Length: 312
Image 1 (tube, rainbow, N blue to C red):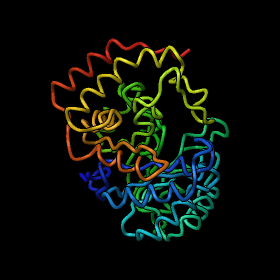
Image 2 (cartoon, one colour):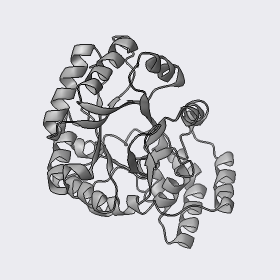
Image 3 (cartoon, rainbow, N blue to C red):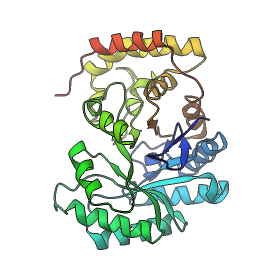
């Protein structure tokens, strides 16, 4: 497994992380079982993955509880724990209570990376209040690094002005070959400022794995109404999936592993694909330790330039 520094001068984390949204319950399908998700995390750690991401919002803390059982099995020092405070808990007192609840569910004394899950568009809690509360938790030793999720550059700039003792280490955003809006502003800003990008949905919720077509579409709550899986979009992405499969065969890799390697071409981007079972964790980890050639990247970029998806 390859490792990179989180943020500027931060701890080393695996170049491929593991997302534990799937462990939040049945939202990802009736075949999701706690024991399988726990084994997926344990297998990922065996293969060198240390960055494991969850959130209080995933099954109202259920994912954190599943993680806690895996942490006991693999050992606390083997896991870089990333979790998130929900966008409805951004008042100072709520941030502190949410952190305490996550610590209890995870069964640990300190969270390695505590992230704001999303900016608050409803209660309009001032970012100053939230960031000062996070810095107080950092000062108290409850959290080691401060991160954000789904933040635009304007939000990042403002949030950073309210931190005096530390800085934002990471911004977790949706980023994959098909959904690249963050490349316009967020990715360049974070690269320039030394903020690591954690890419959620790095294989397009499974579409880039090659497992789905118009005769086989996901039926779980998370993806059944997802625009990516519209019939027109599945058809439109088929040339890309074919190219991922062809390139993968040359390296002994799967289409999903090629899609993850495409993200890893940027050394400050860490994909955090999910896994329901140990075999998927193995596949994810296999996306590290190798690279796409310049020719292969040009081939994929040529296909992506021609790709047109229906978002309406």
